[in-house]
Length: 113
Image (cartoon, rainbow, N blue to C red; front, side, top):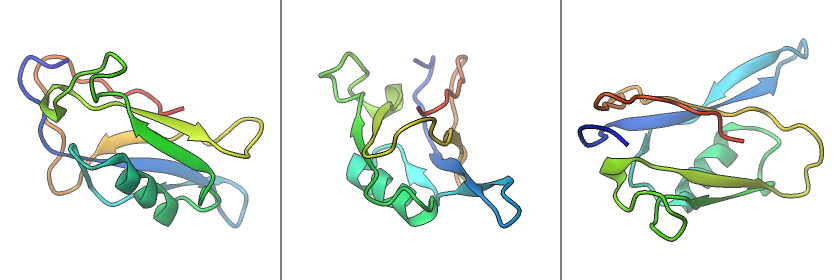
């Protein structure tokens, strides 16, 4: 939760193996706080190679699972990998380019697992 409403956009960064097998960060386009999980998933599919049709995304913050109901109070997603075994890439949430996230006193980012 934040002491003032959360505003701005975010992006999701996924490390993808490069030509030399080191992980290169690939970032989605800006995503608005009220974007439906279907379009969050599509943005990941477009930018993070190897994940197309390999994950499902749904909101944690729709009120059914104990999360906040309104995007201004925060946004949460569950991501389920489908048909992928073993350790997965560690995706991160980062600020949007045009409209960075703005919070009150408690600004934290957690890994998306």
